[in-house]
Amino acid sequence: AQSVTQLGSHVSVSEGALVLLRCNYSSSVPPYLFWYVQYPNQGLQLLLKYTTGATLVKGINGFEAEFKKSETSFHLTKPSAHMSDAAEYFCAVSKMNRDDKIIFGKGTRLHILP
Amino acid sequence: DAGVTQSPTHLIKTRGQQVTLRCSPKSGHDTVSWYQQALGQGPQFIFQYYEEEERQRGNFPDRFSGHQFPNYSSELNVNALLLGDSALYLCASSPDVTANTGELFFGEGSRLTVL
Figure: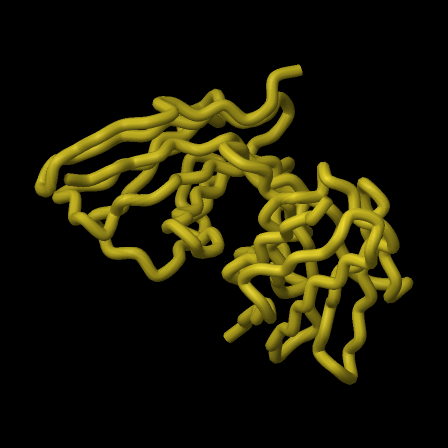
C-alpha cells in the first residue's frame, strides 16, 4: 500500500527565509508525486508534480521539489518566503497507473512571520 | 470558464439523517472524485466516477454512495449520518486521460456538520 508522511504539522518561517516542507513516501512501485496547496476556505490547487524524467520539478509561485528515490523523499522548497505563501500544503502519491487513486498526507500548515 | 462547483457550501444535519452533496465538474472534464477531509487531516479518497460508474473506491462504508449523471455532474450521498461524518467534502474533476496523474481540479467543498 502507498502512504505519505509529512514531517511537521506546522512550520513557521520568517518572510524572505527559505521554506522547506518535508515529505516521505512509501510505494511498492514507481510513484507519481504531487504537492497541493490549500488556502483558507478553498479547495486544493496543484503546485507541482513528478511523474517521470527530471527529478527536480518546478511549480507555481516559485516552489520546487526534488524526487530522491534513494531517500524516498519529495521535499518542497522555496528560496524566499512571502506572506502570501501562508497556507496548508499537502504531499500526495499515486501509482503510475491511471486507475489508481491519489493518497494525501496529513498536511503541513505554513506560517510566515513578518 | 467555471471551475468545479459544489453545493451546498455548508449544511448541518443530525445523527441518523441522510445528506446529498452535489458537484459540477470543470468544463471538459469527465471524471469526478470525492474526498473527505476531517479537521486537521488530509483528504481521504472516497470514490471516483467515470462514465456514470464507480471506477474505484476507498475504505468507506456502504453508507457512502454516489452517482454520476450523463452531463458528468455527480452526487455524494451519505446515509445514517454519524458524528464522525462531520468534515469538508471535496469534489475533484479531471479529464480521464489524466485522472491519476495529479491533474485534479478541486471545488471549494461542502462543509457538513453532524450534531
